[in-house]
Length: 79
Image 1 (cartoon, rainbow, N blue to C red):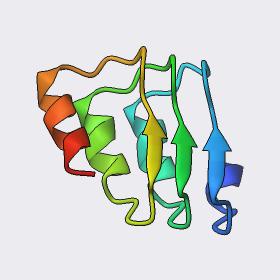
Image 2 (cartoon, rainbow, N blue to C red):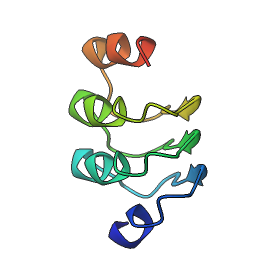
Image 3 (cartoon, rainbow, N blue to C red):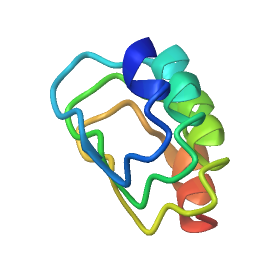
């Protein structure tokens, strides 16, 4: 994942079912050109969502089957 984060021109990325956690979301937040991000079936929580909220170019994100509770849902709606 660290190598991917260095590829700053990537606009679309699917990492479905990779057991990603909040620290991985922090790494992904450095990929500032991302427009589409698929993180279905991982272990991301509200803390990871806060990191992903830094992605200002993000247009579409898929987060089903993660560990997001009500607090995280409110963060998502602000994206």
